[in-house]
Image (tube, rainbow, N blue to C red; front, side, top):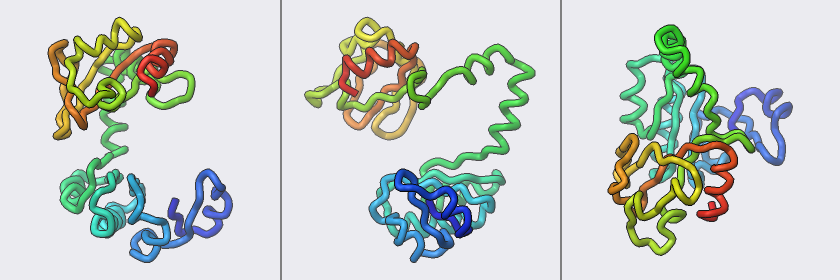
Amino acid sequence: VIEINEGIAERFGSDLVPFITGNANEDETLLRAGVERARTLISALPEDADNLFVVLSARQINEHMKIISRASEETTYQKLKFAGADNVIMPDKIGGDHMASLVVTPDLVEFLDNLQVSTEGSVNVQEIPYKAVCPDSKDKTIREIDLRNRTGCSIIGYKSPDGGYVINPEANQLVEQHSKLIVIGRPEQIATLHKEFAI
């Protein structure tokens, strides 16, 4: 974590979450943080201009890592993408859309809010890499993988090698190298998934 406030860095830094004191807009700070070796960078600064500068600098240093950036204004969205961000998140827009959805479809929103993506012991939604379902590197269809019968989980999405998404894919959907499956299930079904596919 890069933090410009030395007091905050000292307060929250630990062996598990190391902090570096410095300005993320400076290449020297990014290099001290090891950005050239990083697999993922999240830029969550409050000002869009700062996030844009960080994304641009980080992408020049490491062209292969995944970059996720925060944005406040819609006009900044495309600029961040052009600068090299793989994903741009707009918390304010998501929050507003979420509140509006609560009025129109409250039960659906409540159901989706109850889905846990990463909380230990209560995971409901998970992504599965190609190697887990095709360990021999031979492409298979969803029918051939037979995930539903083997684990109880349901496949709700397929991410293709080129980054496109298929919602509720058909049984004859071919799972190709560098793709991922998105599955949903109860915690005990997710546990079976981990055991069955050695995830």
